[in-house]
Image (cartoon, rainbow, N blue to C red):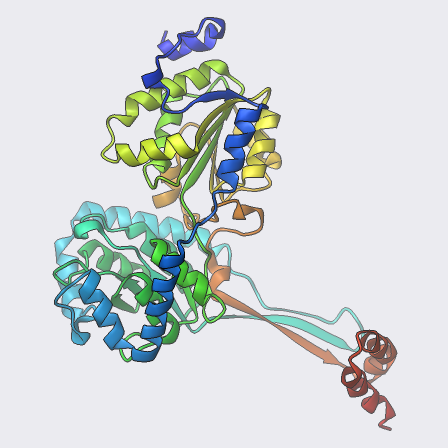
Length: 457
């Protein structure tokens, strides 16, 4: 019998861990302490430093006015000192070279992920429709893709950690939507290169042009267009705080997927869960950012204690230990709830980016979920399955915005246009009511637009 099974069977005699093991505190819910922590997580939001906003605003204005010259200036300053206008676009020669530098195991994994992502997103494709249910009235809606989309992919640290999944998750839905031209922007390494895995992934996903540009100046260039970088209609993809600020400032001038905040995970677990699995999953999000949040809600005190101890043990094996420790100290929580129903009540308040159900037969609880970016059910469906392979998009609403927004999808690259036609007979039948409503709103010209047709014999 494992130590965790002993804990489950003898929860009344739980070992007391020393302070050094308490990376994350265990609290009872409901309680004042638990409420304070939950509220701090819900309200942490995306905080913008005024100085950063000023910097990004200046960069955007510079790119809008000076195009390539501004993009090259910022790229040389922050990323690649030898960048020139002629090197901003990944060449066919670079694409061919990249295909020879990646291994077969990568290609196999890439192909599998692409197939799964494509299959899932194809089910999202909507259809145009028409209705003639009211005699003399023709109504409808036509769906069209945007003409051009930009996929932003964050920089690879020293070119060594290419976010291949971000390429697939952004470009594949755009391609399925029918977008005519897909651009990708990603910051180059110091030698002006782009990691070959990113290039190969981009070609697999249907990207037409790859630009060596990052941060706020890349977002501005995609929004306004430059001599080299094509103007787009929608920009999707995660990025650093400068990217996030730029997307927020430019939203309305260009379509965006969302204003993404720090990563977050909430796990609901019962006595059947495995503490080592839960701890690993909480840490997988905590290592992203000191602002990331990781919550466990369980009705088992034994599970709470087991996870607390596992977090302390696993944390020391992480390369990003310091980041994860900061995240857990500020926005980590293990709460023991009276029952699983209460756990779902809290989860719906938090509206987490990632919700994991580590409970016996999670399918029975689906109808309790109202607010979540994505739901991962069962012991063998950790959040990274969704990040890379399952098929649903991993660009998800954060900071509680799952209350009103959804994952990146085909719909983000589509436009819906209404169609309306009235016969003369139906127009005359409804005209008095149209004029009455226009007059109530004080819009006389609206009413006259209708009236002039009634007077016409």
